[in-house]
Image (cartoon, rainbow, N blue to C red):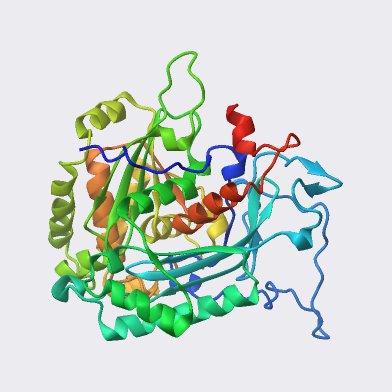
Length: 441
């Protein structure tokens, strides 16, 4: 059954107001798991006498993904995205008297594998990340066997959440949305864990539905959709589940431009992610035959995808591309680019051909565990998970062989921020209407 009927309204993420910004604190490799510290200067950012070098302000460009200078971002580097200049009065975005008065928003995503936080302030038609944090906590470790969150896993998550709570307090956050996903949904003690988190950290987590998770992934990645495409297969390979969304961009002549929410034709959530697949089949020593077993398991689940036959026809006709948001695809992009260390500004927005993705998957499957650990874009903490993610991706690609895949180093957190800021009307036109309202009349 197509699960789109009861979806709440989506922020107008395909307009300039929906463009997101992301920092270097994401999750595709261990090099990105440290807290983004605003006090740490960029590489080469101090003088010999120890004083920090001051950056010039005023004419610094703001780049869209894949179009900016291909340099490595430091841990506190901020990248803001927009496609056009924001309406401004006296040099400031409409709605705020000065930069110092801009509110700070927080988005936290506690998943089966990662705990990730993003703090941002509105900027022009997008937002500026002011701090970020990411840590692999493996909250869902062992849940497939016991149905419960384990004590060591909960302790790891709570320690990470304490850091997140301190950052939220330090930044005087105006609004926040703190979500928990598959591990807490599936565990019989998920509610007890949420109560414990509030008691020990002061953070109130919201266990969101699979539907909400899919919608937020769309909101966070919408600015990377090719506007010339006829459709997009967006997938988010998580730790305990994987969301798959068909965004239908085909329009009839003379029809009005529709919001991204209205373009979601159907979606599903698969009960497979990098943690539970690797636990079932093993992640360290994966033979080609074992890898194919993983692929077949996921492929069997895709048979029941809503409107699968119609999507088959759309993909065969051409003009449909994939858009992947997960550590799996960002890792593949980092390996493809042969990065000496992960650089999200080079990865985010990267296009890979169908052939390139296939060759990358074959390369990773051929690596032994030690070789995966040694790769700077994989590392020890992902070395036993990445092939499970590749198996999920391979099953999707084999069913719907799109010629292009775009890589997104963004997702739920960015989607949360876009929706919160849109609700508050932080991007307003000169007429006082929200930019999304102005765009759609």
